[in-house]
Image (cartoon, rainbow over all chains, first blue to last red; front, side):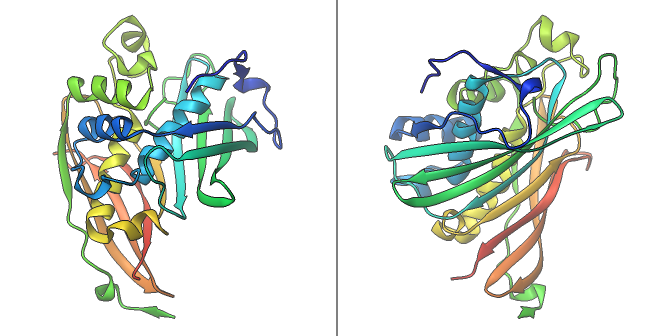
Length: 145
Length: 132
């Protein structure tokens, strides 16, 4: 998984923009390493990708393609898992900017993604991030970045 | 049609120590190398003053709990909607809990939370999963 084009700038994305789609292929080794890191038993996932792992790899693909500014906080996340994905299956990730707003100097962006395996929608996600204005001590939430 | 919360399968809580070694392993495995998660100058200069765990690593405990209760159905119709409330600062033992709310049209719904040993919520939200 690698991005071959220059990164997009998050602060230049506008509502309705589509990011270039990309393809994930989560291997058995990827699943093993992911589960070893999270601590979850691999027993359920000998043939299928844990759905949140797919979400994590899709998020990593997004981060490879979008330049994330300092002070960015991952404030919210939604997932709908529609269909199990087998190890090594190709999954196309399509992302668009669902909304972008400003509140007291903070910029809040929501990115919606769909994951397709062939003609099948296997899952979707909505990722909300906040970029606090310079000098802000409380970004409004405290999760990931 | 909505029925009582007692119709929803129980979801056992999941607790796990999130220390810096786990955060580093997750960064490698999930390919999230944001320096805010590593020991170093950038994490020290952040608004948190030290490395924080990946929010997705904390959320993984919720997914683990739901998968344990629903098996493959979790991957075949599960949903999550969460908001992070506070950073998980390693080392911290995090517990994910899911409290049944209702069963509606074959979907069991839960309030979910991940909290520290002292009960501080790190994330809150909802999860649903199909009964069949």
